[in-house]
Image: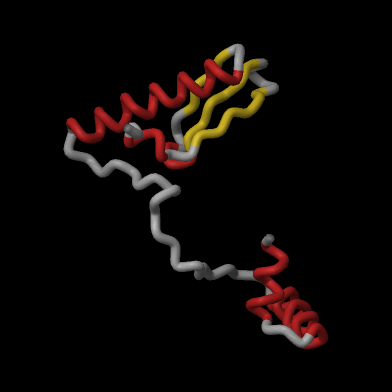
Length: 108
């Protein structure tokens, strides 16, 4: 059986400043866990997130929805300088595709 906190997005990276591996969770961006090995950093952040979720629930506070099960519309708005917009529109027109398709391909 999958623990509900197993659905969160975890990552381990090296912290040059701390000279240790740091465990992170995308849904809890204010949390981190430092350890000598990547395995221990992952274990630490997972345990910390479990404690945080339990605490949020006990206080009747909102628990973040895991990104892995969250619904996304596929739409978002981006503000860019007008000149960049113009250049992209020209590129799209010259390529015979929509501006949306051009920008989407650049994000891949």
